[in-house]
Length: 84
Image (cartoon, rainbow, N blue to C red; front, side, top):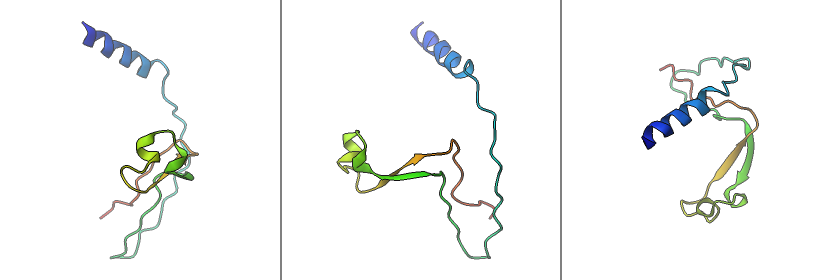
């Protein structure tokens, strides 16, 4: 019974608010020369050091050094062209 209630609540919370169907214009990148690899940032945003976040696992660099990207645009893209 509890699983059914959880499922219904989750489905309702997902469906009722709806989805933002607005789309930003897509920029098509020209193909890279054969043999060249191009990587792109998957999200636009502000780079921050992990120490600036409240999660102690990341702030204390338990998993190693790194950075975070705080998104400024609500979309995530593939970091590669993916045509080969």
